[in-house]
Image (cartoon, rainbow, N blue to C red; front, side, top):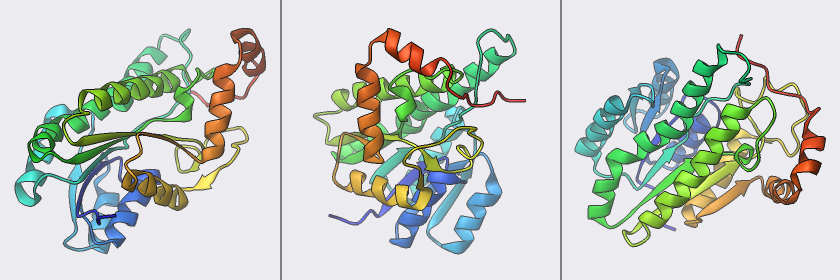
Length: 255
């Protein structure tokens, strides 16, 4: 496996994104890191001087993302890997009109932000005849979860979007990987008021993500046990699924 020399990553300020940044930085890669919060990015840059370019921005700002991509490419060249990891998760209920804005924000961040992350890099990768695009989806996108309609819908859309992109780019030399994490111990999951089976630490998840990326997989669920759970849930008839999930604990709505 060839070492990763250059990588562009969103959602790098905490959780899986931070763990991925630390994993690749420890291997000597040059990183372009995106997150809304500047201080955690700067802390990573201080820890690995000369390896990290910081881009504090929101992934829903496509113009800012393109400017960051242009800066990274202009100074370092086309990255080997682009990872669209930025995402938000919050409980929503459609009956509350104030949740409509939250639903839009979740969809904009988790789906539009992914496309906006990849868009500036595809042309350069296509001309180079190489590159890897990695989208972080979720097992929550396999079936709709009560109380998490926006999150489940955004991740289901991400799974379909990444599949479309993979087929579109098949002959270009650019590979596309969909990663569907199960429960990873991050600030995003620590608020979940329910048991989280097969929970793994973020640093362990980062190593497994990197292994899947290096092997040029097209789709992977991590941890693998959640892949089995997802397949079983998909096979359940609606009547059975509805009965099982109707009383399940739900992610809290945003205060």
